[in-house]
Amino acid sequence: MESVQVQVRELPAGEVGRRHFELTTVELPDPGPGQVLVRNTWTSVDPGLRLRLRADAPQGYFPAFPPGSAMDGVFAVGVVEESQADGFPVGSTVWHSYGWRSHAVVDSGEVAMNGIASLRRLDVDAVPAHAYLGPLGAMGLTAYAGLHVIDALDDTGTIWVSAGAGAVGNLVCQIAKLSGLRVVASAGSDEKVAWLLDEVGVDAAFNWRSRPLSESLQQAAPEGLGLCFDSVGGTHLEAALHALNDNGRIALCGSISEYEGAAAGPRNLFLATSKNLTLRGFRGSAHVPLLDEMQQRLGCWLAEGRLVHRESIYEGLESAPTALADMLAGRTTGKTLVRL
Image 1 (cartoon, one colour):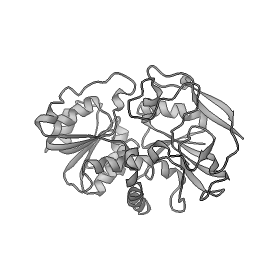
Image 2: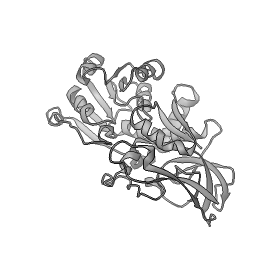
Image 3: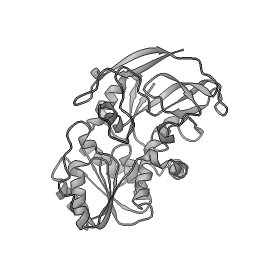
Image 4: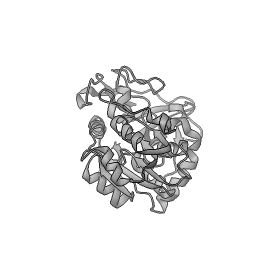
């Protein structure tokens, strides 16, 4: 059985482009005991992939992608075509960690990506399969876990969500709103701001490129912030530290601003001390025990039509590098996916 894979040709020094990848066809072994052959139908495109396209992938994070090899540790959903694993019959829909390729042989006993991406059978009667790469998968768990670790799910007050139109950010906005918080969101274009206000339903939103962040936050939250969910870092985190009230709490999800360049700030970190702030770094994959709770809660909201689910879909495996470059440049909205 042959599989077409996207492999890393060279690690990018700056912006990611198609030239850094190549399509390669490899021969797969037949599945052995406990294994399945999966034909992938959708594969995920996530900001964190950029961190793994560096020789110095952050300590404690998933390992860097070695040039000339397949990109393991990327979410995908697909259909089982051959099976020697109990509980995974031919024709069943599953998720696993071997995305950015057409086919994969997956071991049902492998603990993948801290357990979040281990082979799992999916219920696709009520929701489409690719929803498990968005609100019902790692994106949903990251959003839910981030609010959980700063005790925001049962809180009141105002939260600022940076990168609010992104795959995780828009879910954070919606979970926070449905949980009773006042939600302020920021995004990088007027179109995304309009989507956040008109469809996602946040209370206030602004284009962070239009004017200084401090001014936008002052207008959107004159009373200050109690909470923040930050995926950008740099000047965004700096602005959050300034706008947070005493005893405020920040969930540190990522630092997109430095994924393709040098870190910039924050220069006012002492405010965390003077205001008694809590800065809580977390990874969604460290909170796998919350997965069932998250899927039940968000699954109900999806079924009831209370959760907006927007996607930027690219066609064909060969488009995956372009999808990644577009997402990192802010040209996508919601969850970025490749349909195979």
